[in-house]
Length: 319
Length: 132
Image 1 (tube, each protein chain N blue to C red):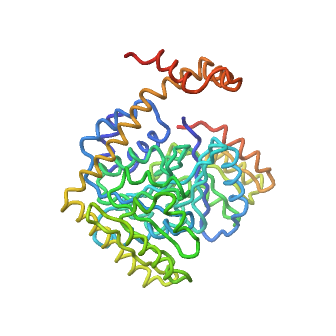
Image 2 (cartoon, one colour):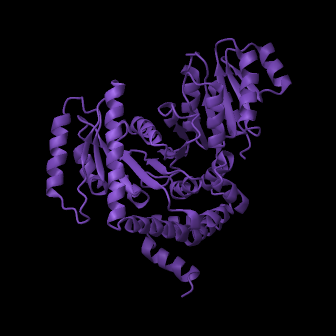
Image 3 (tube, rainbow over the protein chains, first blue to last red):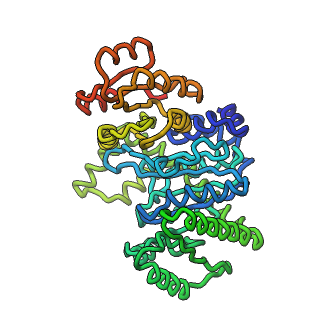
């Protein structure tokens, strides 16, 4: 496993791919590879892109890759698609919209399924970012599922968060409800040639006017018009990329990068504790049938979840 | 928690994608499978690279153009060249039984499903494949 980590660091595509798949599948010992690469992480600029389904996240990402490649920077993309909550199956097709870069060695695009992780992000995303980082990608774009109200997790992983809004979907209200407004570093009004774009712009603007920005960064609003006009589309995405870099520079100049990095390590230790402590206990309970018994007792109202949790804690936790 | 991972692919100018989309959807709904559909008009090399990036267990190539005897061996070569020797290849499409047999005998593909085979047969076969 350590070997795999070493090979991934040389940029070996197969090693990187295998490592990400092992992370997804939670293959035992994958941690060994992560242990090996962890000290070398934290170099790339991580950009999160979120917004409602159909807002145009993949199309924007595709064009952003072009803008970034023009500066000879390399790009890693992780596009997260939902797994079905009912069957666990997943149908992923982001690559249909990100076709232009498939043979460019400076670009690595990978789709991930959520596999039941909440927050719109695959559990594998955090470690996946590390892998793309150490393989030497300058910019890493994480595209979230776009299921609306659980998208804010991205803030824990990205330096710059883009929130994509589109006119006529009524999603300004949705976005406020979902807390998306608080996580945005840059707003994008996509498909801005559509009716309602000015209205959406004004609404977003007045919402921003009500907010306060302790860090000193007021999220700009970038209008992007339809990709049916390739030229102007490319131009506005170039401008978007400039804004993204501006934000990154702002974080660096004001020592805020550390703050974002801290959010990420906090999330990571949280997840690691969960999988080291909670998951083994849960698995034990399920294997021994105790979990089912607890469910039955609850169904009969013999006890309550808090008493049960306290019993389990008593049994497993050494004080 | 290893799931079978399958890339469903098309190539060239073949526009007959109804059945492969149905297969993709069925696989999703049956569960336990992660299915990637890379869309129409892709080159074999693009599909092979994608399969390696995903570390897919299986690639399913759909061919309705009659070019299966040429294209399947080329797909196999593209996969091997991209570093995907371990990735299994299967076919779907308008493919006569004797051609299917020939391709399987050559070892080019693990299975070929003619367009008359019920979708569920393909789904069950995919679910039975080992994961790496």
